[in-house]
Image (cartoon, rainbow, N blue to C red; front, side, top):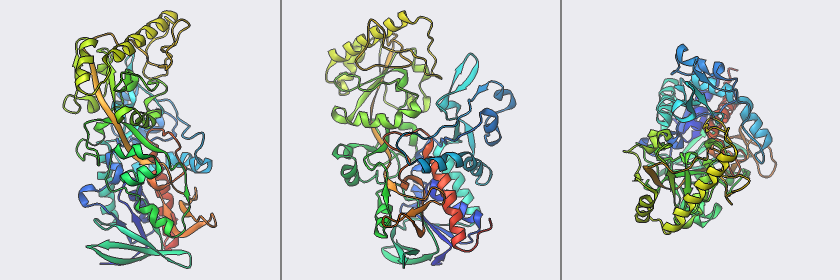
Length: 507
């Protein structure tokens, strides 16, 4: 067993794999990934994603060369608008700029060098409008078989590149001499083993799997959130980094959380169903709490830009759960992978009165309030449609169909895609909050991914970071698909720097 490496990566998720493969590509000849989890849990949170990657791009023709599921005939019936925006508001401007400017190149690298099987995400990001597949929300790329396919491709690439992976080998602490990282201590079979390396890349995820740390940083209500992904992201990497003087940064009170099947496992994701527990069809209907009250603007924006914050809103409702409700006209638009008969418990009824009675059996507390909510919603929608008869429902744009007119305006609007829920049979599903990852993390140099010292604000030599451990990228909310892209962008930067420190850079 070797104990010296050019580069050691902590974590086998998408970001860690990207860093390891980038290190080899840049010239490192001995790269090791240490993973706390057993082999059966390889892939971190990346495994549980839909494989979506948000990147700047020039439109359909820019993306066609890297996807595998579009024929020339199909391409003539697809609309993908160019996309140039990724970040805004509070995030670290230089960090976001670095990610945005490197995103397209990183995606190309994943496709060409790592052989990630990218596809156009027809099943998640497009609707058919007038015979054309129209993409919406600024995101078009995903991977074959989602996160499972993503991690499978990484494992194949790691084997080909000669990267070692040690499972059930948690990192215990960093080795440091005169301010420079010289390696890592790992635990194997209950015994500590000293490893030396000229660089260490931390890609160990956030702290979302620790109910104790969730309560500490996010609030006590987060103890009851469902963990969407790996149960092994318990904040170990942050503790190690802090012990050598790393700087913390970002939204430590924030996280990515979404509408999640209320019947899903609580403490970890399901390796088989994975991301299918997501319940993202709320823009097509309404969400109500157990007292029958709406609590979010379901049509505030495209699902990509609201799903990661609406999980929190569900958690804040009484008993931390809610119901999503649709009429028969919208049911065909729900994703089968999320709302299929074998995937979710469906609550169906021919009329709204019957639906309310069935919801009482599933936790609804106030039938009359629920019925009034639906009645008032429908009346507001009809009033707006009468006032704006030329508007047409279109799920690929913010269509302006709302509940707000000059005669009727709900206190809590639905700003787009508002249609009356008056066609039976009706459908409801019960949802909870699923936490994906936490936003607070480590401060890094935007160009090298080097972790900054809390004392000097300069990079700690030999220590890098990528993935969900990076702080400062996201505040309050999250544009879907950004996390995997960021993991690749900063993983590439870290890997390239590792080769330079090992004196083996070929670039």
